[in-house]
Length: 171
Image 1: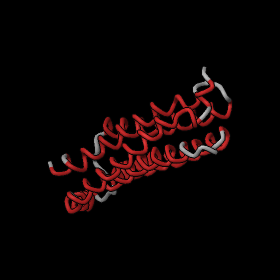
Image 2: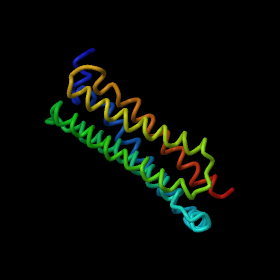
Image 3: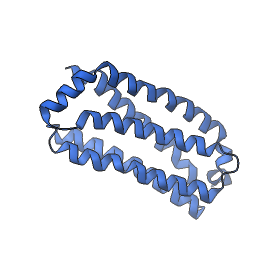
Image 4: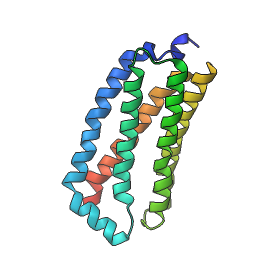
């Protein structure tokens, strides 16, 4: 594996693209929630769960973690060990969403298949960050090559949640 897999500076252009895209997509979540806030809150009151606002929070956290990783990766003085530690920290932060989703799901009335898919994708995202950080520390096993997968997964989760908050909540 090329040494670029463990050198954040070699990923400069990737981090610039990811930072710009996720900053813009974060705005979409705010728009989705603000357009349908009454419907979202009414649905949550009806089912007695924070399931929908949890999706909004999950989306923002996923996108802001990508943004944070990208911005830290753009720091020319960041070393391999510090960046690896930051990825592990982000993996831990990303794990909050699946934990909250589990408690909100119990009273949401969402079909188990949909919930299991959502939880599986969230846990896969946690694992991608954790493996990326761990392999950076070990200098073997992929390193930063885990980030494109993680970033695409995070954006996909956020886009799916945005669709639910914009469209599905009104059905």
